[in-house]
Image 1 (cartoon, rainbow, N blue to C red):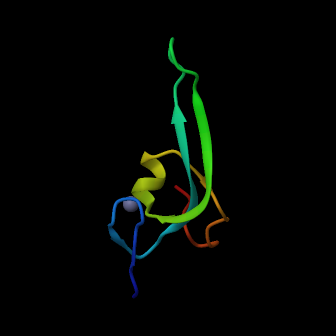
Image 2 (tube, rainbow, N blue to C red):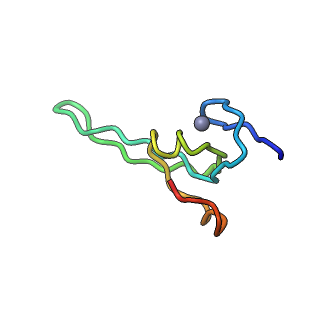
Image 3 (cartoon, rainbow, N blue to C red):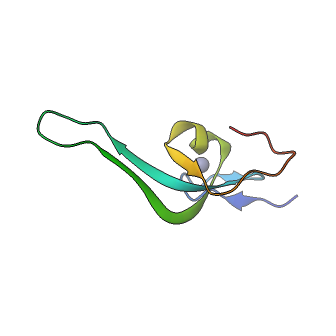
Length: 67
Ligand SMILES: [Zn+2]
């Protein structure tokens, strides 16, 4: 079984997800809110997909559970 490194946390995982990182900054009284999706595709592990904002770059394999 091969493992790959999560580009977000550096964890060695067997299953990584192709995602676009998303930056969300809530609006404050002195700053406008930011909701930005990067063009760059990164490989993230399950934990990062559920912990940080992201948008899937492609559908996971059919037998891969979606976070
Ligand atoms: Zn990770």
